[in-house]
Length: 226
Ligand code: DX5
Ligand code: ZN
Image (cartoon, rainbow, N blue to C red; front, side, top):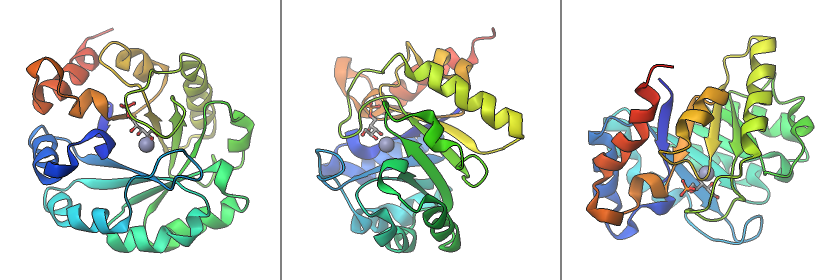
């Protein structure tokens, strides 16, 4: 079954350890960390100190820290995030003029290398990434904030990337990030995604639902047979 990777961007930062414990109890094994610098995207979030602060809790539970760098000059921070506990580091093609070198830098630091692109960036910018990346991330919202709506055109992009990965026999993860909800998660997986980032759908606290309830609502559509 496809894997859900909760994004802590929508977690309660005053109770981050408790929110992480709740997703761990729900059987989550990836945790998505959205790093934003206020330059590449119009928001500022967290950095290596917060990753370091949650590392022990995650590693003890076998949870992979999946760090998404929405920052300019990401090559300057790869070492710091890996040292802080990142096991996957994903960079944007829009911020990496030397993408091949940056992917090598991530791998040399000991992490899996992810490559991602914004919703209006041509898929052709990934052409050389298929052979070198461990993960390809499709942004299905404009990066910067949680709680946005899924951009429908993303589904076609997911399918195109899935086709290319299968064509070359790549076992890279195909991750989708932004606006993933119970009512669209199945179609996103059917298009070819195998890792679904979900922030507000997991940590949103509407209607008195718990985090466990939210995760179950995302998993249920994936269990339905075709
Ligand atoms: C947006 C982030 C996403 C976001 C997902 O810039 O990269 O990971 O937190 O949040 P939801 O699931 O609420 O769209
Ligand atoms: Zn993200």
